[in-house]
Length: 306
Image (tube, rainbow, N blue to C red):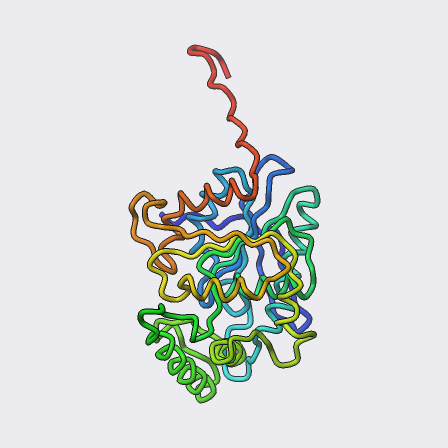
């Protein structure tokens, strides 16, 4: 049986009419740390349910939302729908974090970003300086083609560069990118694909009409950051995570590698860590100093009446 969705915390509307649904799996303790999960490109928030439940068991209230155009958010990418990084960074992420702060004003709040969610979450933090206790990046690295692959085999980076150019060309032709058919990125707007391909080509973050220089904004991020690369991850290998972290000279960055041995021997990659998350959740809890989980009520003595 399919599990019911988590309760709705807020329903938000952006200045351009886009809508977001914010859901929460709340702890009963009002001061429990709050973790806001930002998904990867093309990945619906519901896919993070195993991670949400694990973080909740470890003592955190967990908030999820879909990136614009996916899951419960609108508009669905189509011809004429051209939002890009600017809308996600300057409208959507801030609206979600504001809703979380209103709901949990006394709790420490952390941003946990996977892949594109982590990259754009960092840009938002540098640009608009939300009140957060820290940022956790998991499988989130720069998409710069020279940072993909390994020193021993740089070929994957070149292949990704060619692929990015083809993706943009296809998106321009069709009016959107049908990633759900090609196995990469989900159904994406032309603007997102353009911005992603530009960063892959140049190594620099930016967006048409941006309020400020995104690279300069990253240099101003002063938060604690836990940056985690994942074994078997070809989309965010250690070099790509390091390239992203190098853009954060003012942040207090701690690097960690999540290995199969940390996950009970389970196989890992860019997405499998979401389900095989035990060692990762514990590392996040220690790094963020989650308080001990309160013990449940003692069982009633045998024969006692309720």
